Image (cartoon, rainbow, N blue to C red; front, side):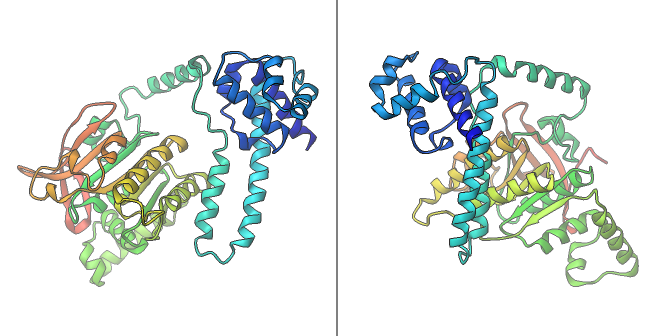
Length: 409
């Protein structure tokens, strides 16, 4: 325990000496043990909100006598060097996580009969893991990392920087499904949202990448049937009714072997009762525990509100923001399916048709609308934060639940 307290003393010392350390560390009151350490941190935060520098006289005026004496004894000269403040910050966070996990375990014992205990646990553990909250940094601290990233991009010059979708014209517009992006696929009911999702999921899994699917509408068996139909080129209706011949059974077995291969990594959650906390927990579990590279959510409007009294529009806005945050926090693409409103019925779909919330339109880095063109199905890249918008003509083989680019042969 002494080591943890020593780290608190050291980082508080550095915070009191340098405003930059206070802001760059992104620590919060709960990261410190209750008592004088937390009171000194809160005092530092208050003083920096009012002035640029802090001295002992200001502390003496702002703290009660006992806490000031504690500051003088433990913090004032805790460490003379500013070079290692990140080490002390990380030690404080590590100790906080241990304390918080112990509290979660203790509270879970009293909630053992709660049917939503699993979701609560995953949510609280995720919050503990996100303890640093570091979101404000000096450019000088990450410019070197950025230059390294440019070097990596040079190696990929001419190639798709994101995860290829298997639809070349779409990749040409959006440069693949890129990390830290929220990609939204919008359509009216029964116009191919889930079929496009399973097509993309199958195309990506065949590349040896991990795929997560959170489905609040279709069961794991329905999704698997769609993917099997796609992969084996078997009529989906025949699979549903069992009308398959010996040759088709052999193709089914080939797909089974493909999916049984250790390189095939598709994780499915088909709980239709998830709140956004449950979705967040499932996504984190898929990425952290199972090495998933991309997650699909089908679909946004089916996510249950935390509070039934919350206006649905605000609930959907919260879900949209949470999924954008997940993409950024976990450094993956998140692909969210969303339903368009009735105004899109019989008309060309537009961004303004996202049902219940314009916030989806705002949060999306890429928005793809499924529609019909003059000569068949199209994917309309209606928003592309980092590139061009445009129309992607596609074929839809309904019997195989498969989308493909018209230029892909």
